[in-house]
Amino acid sequence: MKSYEQINRKIEAGKAVVLTAEEIIDYVESKGLEAAAEEVDVVTTATFGPMCSSGCFLNFGHSTPKMRISEAWIDDVPVYCGIAAVDVFLGATQLRQGDPANLYYPGEFRYGGGHVIEKLVAGQRVQLFGLSYGTDDYPRKEIRTWLTIDDLNQAIMVNPRNCYQNYNAAVNRSDRPIYTYLGLLKPDMENLSYCSAGQLSPLLNDPLYETIGVGTRVWLAGAQGHVYAEGTQHSPTCDRGPNDVPTEGAGTLALTGNMKEMKPEFVRGVSLIGYGVSLAVGVGIPIPILNPEILERTTVRDEEILAPVIDYAVDYPRKTGKVVCRLSYSELKKGEVKIEGKQVRTGSMSSYSKALEIAHLLKDEIKRGDFLLSRPLRPLPREQSMGGLKIVDQNNREVRR
Image (cartoon, rainbow, N blue to C red; front, side):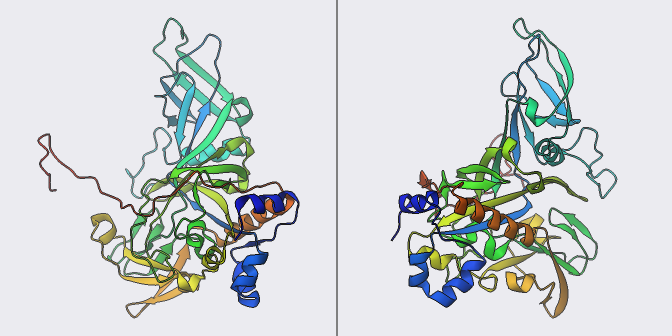
């Protein structure tokens, strides 16, 4: 048994043994579980891919004369101003003003909140335009200026839902192409799209949330952030395999970090034809090896992780709960799978190579003593399900349409 304090002392002394979630698999196989648990202090996990439930709080500081901004746009992308005078929230999926969306189907969605966040992290200039009704203490009614992230007092990424523990693999069994947040799905199940780093993914290496919890320090696009809550739609009460790994979405994380410390290559705006805009984010999370049981969970392999294959033409939008089949990530990563006797091409929306790069970057930071581990303030809920939105009239009678 080890403690967080013991591991951190070894990190500070430059003596910690750190391996990535990919490296640990063969290491445990060659050394044996008990011996490896004595030697290894930390296993680094990571993921990189689109995470729609992301955004940031920005503080501009006060102009002269002061202004209570009630409406604002950054690079023509609307931001939420219902906070304080010069604080705004920019959501990753917010479209640029005037974007035709799917009016001319399928829409291209060339620019939105995710792209503005990418520009800010990259140090590029963006245009702020703001309006106000004017008050005695905040008399200015209009402002237009250009700024960079260095001109902001704060730029804080606040992501309500990142790092899905597992996720759907999407197919289209209809006779027409459909456009989704998992990309273009061709008719008659011609292709399949998925989005996970599999054996590298943080919550798949800590399936019961034994070390990842509220307060856990994380590597968020290069900055040292933390988990501030369970993520929205956190739903750990689900079917799990014999290794406790969920066979559906399950857990999520709410993450925050300082955008001024982030690396541009791990914060990228995304345009999804026919769907909208998003933000691809890189996340790395260290797992302290406190005991052999925790270590054993970090040796999970792609072939041991099953993703549900869902028809996004009917079953996903209609919430039927039907699953076409379940496939392992080792099968998905081969580029072609067989479903119902049909050969189906597969592709990933996430980048395993970028996730592996993050896992190694985090490993290097820990070995240098630049990244210490933090004990969670409280664990993530292990029993919790996700409800749906019930449509009712003013008399609370269900409306069926």
